[in-house]
Amino acid sequence: MNFVLREAMLTFRRAPLLSALSVTTIAFSLFVVGLFGLVAVNVQRALSQVAERAEVVAYLLPGTPLETITHALKDIEAFPEVTNAAYVSEDSALARARRELVELQGPLRELERNPLPASIEVTLRPTARDADHVGAVADRIRDFSFVDDVRYGRDWIEKLDKLRSVLAAVGLAVGIAFAAVAVIIIGATIRMTVLQRGREISIMRLVGATDWFVRFPFLLQGIIKGAAGGFLAVGLSYAAYLLSNRWLMVRTEFFDPPQAAAIVIGGMVIGLFGSWISVGRQLRKV
Image 1 (cartoon, rainbow, N blue to C red):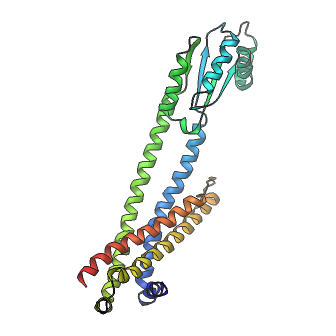
Image 2: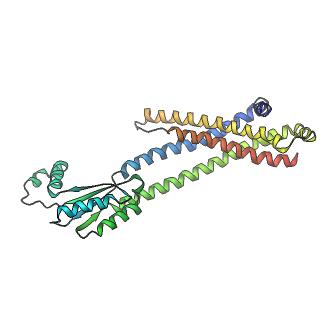
Image 3: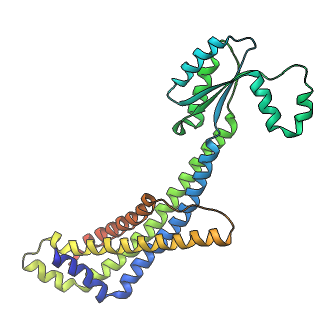
């Protein structure tokens, strides 16, 4: 193992310019992905905050017995998508309207009869705030005989789902594109290193070295370069995060530790993959 590690690190001294080019290419490729990732993370968190307001409101027919409503609340809370179901009486609905609709306080206070119906407000689990789950819950609640109408903002929930899908697709495309560029560059540098050491590799084979013994230092070299590029990309992304908070007057959030680790691991995978392809091709020629 010491021999393998020594051979992998020796390449950095033999070809420092090529090694720096590999690390820099991986770093900037992952940095672009990281910048897009920062935007995606903050947009996703903003969308999650908007999605928290996704709820189903069932308006009840006048005169529905309280006992019937109590049983219905238990049934609704038993739905796997639901976290809570709360009853809002006619009086509570009117008091809320007077409190929240400040511009209509005068007309609301002059009402002789309360026009607002009682309702059941249903809060959904975070994993069930998409259009399909919300629509399914609304349809089941609509089947209750005492329910007059059900509202859940179908249009904006569907638009929210589409926005999430587009964001995920664009992120995947950007990640694949820049990962491919990094693989090509690091593959070229590894290939040059193998060519430089072609005579040495031929001698190692003559004395009985297996392909794996020859290949492993290059694979380790690719992993090290990928890890270095990943750490550099995280550092650059953090600098961009600090600048955006300072100069753009926009409060953003940085990657959490698992997301930052994923960038470094991504760099290691890119380095390993690029090395694997290049070494395999060159060993067949040596």
